[in-house]
Amino acid sequence: MVSKVIEAVTERIRQRSRPSRAAYLDRIARAADEGPRRAHLTCGNQAHAYAAMGADKDALAAERAPNIGIVTAYNDMLSAHQPFQSFPDMIKQTARAAGGTAQVAGGVPAMCDGVTQGQTGMELSLFSRDVIAMAAGVALSHNTFDAALYLGVCDKIVPGLIIAAASFGHLPGIFVPAGPMLSGLPNDEKSRVRQQFASGEVDRARLMQAEMESYHGPGTCTFYGTANTNQMLMEFMGLHLPGASFVNPGTPLRDALTRATTERALRITALGNEFTPVGEVLDERAFVNGMVGLMATGGSTNLVLHLPAMAKAAGILLDLQDFSDISAAVPLMARVYPNGLADVNHFHAAGGLGYMIAELLEAGLLHEDVRTVAGGGLRAYTRDPKLTDGALGWQDSWPDGARGTLNDKILRPVGDPFQPTGGLVQLSGNLGRGVIKISAVKDDRHVIEAPVRVFHDQDAVKQAFRAGEFTSDTIVAVRFQGPKANGMPELHGLTPVLSILQERGLRVALITDGRMSGASGKVPAAIHISPEAAVGGPIARLIDGDIVRLDADTGRIEVLSEGFADRPAATADLSANSHGLGRELFEVFRQNVGLSTEGASALL
Image 1: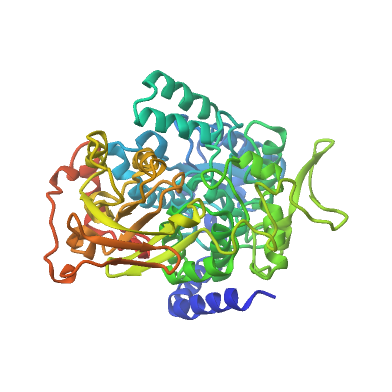
Image 2: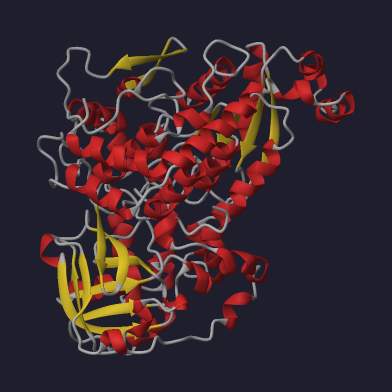
């Protein structure tokens, strides 16, 4: 039985979403009732679809074997997605051996925020989520598939693919991870070198050496940022096979899980007896479970943006209050960088997601009675995949019933957590609404009251730092960074600067209508402030010297200076944001994007 708080939040979401969810379920039910997709195509349609399929042509034309559509985010610039290069052939071979077929339905773009961080391209990053959803929609619109496999890992890719999967919710769909790269230079050492470079203590050659030793091979970056938070979500929401998230690429177990995922996708189509349309997996309980996982692991703030958009695609309406209430009820059980020294490989070895799910289920903080792609409820996700004589199976990690963490500096039980509440807090006050991640912020930094310095871009902050202008307690406000202004780029490039100021003994914080990377966290940062400055939100009325109080303990963000509410909103010349490096192609997104509190989507 789930706790009263979890059940109350779930019921509130259910009631709020009742009309939109009912309409969504009706749409996907009617689509499913039309039967296997290929039956409705003309012979000419089908001939085009199968022309290059070689030995699979006869099986496809017969329309009796299930056909999997592969939507892939492969490219070899993005380390997390490079392993996907070999997945389609493996999936096709596995499907053929199991009596089915598989085709690459299409590819979707996958940009690396690590490459674009602090660069102009970052202004396309958030909007790429909507482009990914649309590209996946184009791929599946060929209407020849009985199930879909979604190959994606990183920041905007998984949320975009979820939006597409929900739009094709009548199809079964399973998400296929590639796994994290092996551990390299410890993340805290990388961060230390970055700070040394920012303060002029080391040269660029040393910085490059540290970066290359940290990001050194195929797989997901090993810190617990947005990409790895996505992988956690896919397990907590029942969209991966159990234990699939953090198995390293290029290993026998990784390949065995990909083959098993293919076989499972064939079994859950409408042609068999275990039909599992993904739109029924993506219900309000699944999204609540995802939010619980986000809080228990101290995950990325970017998911506070993505989850409302993902849910809305399935007819479910989330609000910041839902996140806040769940955070207050769910303890922080993990310390993974930037919230600790461990990386995701260490976290996985300590017991990982299976341990966390088991603990949270026992504490009544997760819904067990959910549909999952693995079949049954969430209890299956407490078991670990194992290879025994080449055969894949799932085993209890604690066969004697004595469940325990293997490293209590990384992973702790519900009854003895790192902190009693989750990693994210909703903020509200006369500056609007926003969110702060506190899982890595020391207790004595939860409340910052100081004069504000106002900037319109992060480069101006760095220039002020280099000029030695920050000599006292300061709240740095960086505005006109919201979705309508310039696509809401991440401001992770400010982390070294703000960290140095904090380590010098200053009480500092950030306020912005933009985003911070999932890798950020040690400096208090009130982010996603909405309404944004570009639409005249309260943050546009700030002036240098205003006294601002940021209180993560009470969830309040207030301007204390007299006359604040009566000032005109500042404006900014944003014309430079509309062209260069493809930004002109995204004007339609800037013009039509919604509020960050509602997912910042131009589609939904």
